[in-house]
Length: 198
Image 1 (cartoon, rainbow, N blue to C red):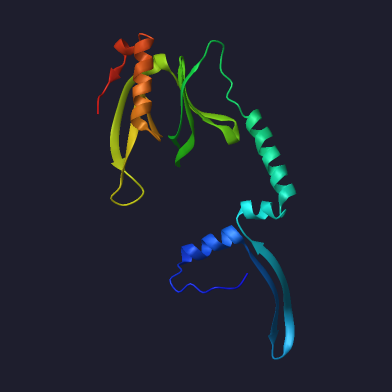
Image 2 (cartoon, rainbow, N blue to C red; image 1 turned 45 degrees about the vertical axis):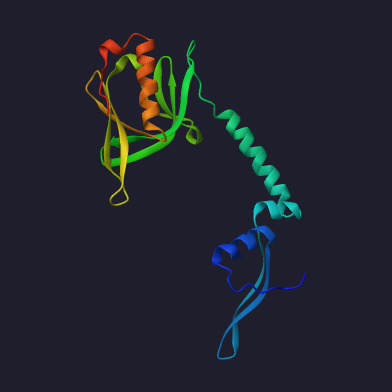
């Protein structure tokens, strides 16, 4: 393969070439002061995309081991449901957790079942938020300021029968709200819940 020069190549082209074809670095570095060598570095590195690495047999054992661990780990972390409970919707989202001085959005997956709404964090095997559908009093979506200046995000406000306010965010917030409302109607609970339209 003969080297070629591309005058109009960009940084993206360079990164694409490195990830696709790979790059091998073989360097010996000696740091010296006043002619006295102090530090020696022998560097041998291969830089490429995982597909390229695996194609040439590099890191194959590590890849197989990590895939097996991930597959086994995913099997263990399955949400356990109560008897008769069926999942109607699963969606990635977050719940605004506020306790004392700790305020943060906790990510996970929302599960809407025929009995409750919950946010499950699979990596921690933790249910961060859950509420029985019978406890939902009010649902409303509001636009709020986002971390990025000038940007807005939609937040689903859920108020329970104890007047406690819960803030939820999801990939498709309208779809989550509609699914909850539909489930409340199906279960005959919509008469007891105040649904605020957008």
